[in-house]
Image (cartoon, rainbow, N blue to C red; front, side, top):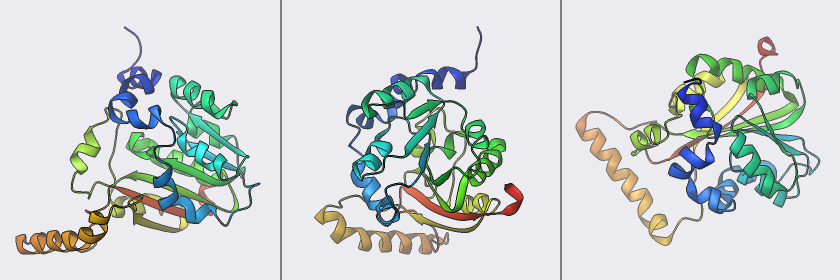
Length: 247
């Protein structure tokens, strides 16, 4: 029997792992648009619509569809799953997403993009390959460009589920470890917890008191909670000014 487990899982990610862990986004590619607006909107509202944008690992293509709805037309993607590439292009209406290895793809396109997006991608990359991908990403940025990286937060209260619900996950990140990785390739970065898209009234009223109560509990247990983003499901990083050494 040829091939690896990883090859088998990515051959048609949508029909397998995607259907198990993220079915809603494949059923309705608009499902995550409120999340995109809440967490990325501020970075795109100020950009000209001629901005060159690529998403690494677009999967179902919902983020690219959201960008198109904002008026961006110079958008593209690269994905390792043939099934996801076919699915994304089928609703985007053009061959926007290319099948391929992201590191090789970006390495061949130096200084080509103003913005590079990676949502729920780095956790699927083997630890020893992270620096190569990040270096290729940095080198593919135009001067003045920036990267948005969104990964599951391993400090979240339900992080164990997030880490192991997908069999293709290779590594997990906290704010500290993601910052450590980004510093290898970028001189400027920020890493924050994700925002809730369209919070309910109950969430608005109870979220802050609940967070403080959990912090107090951790303090009593002697574990501490300062600087731990346990209340945020994801980490959203923005990085710019690639280091000269990685170009």
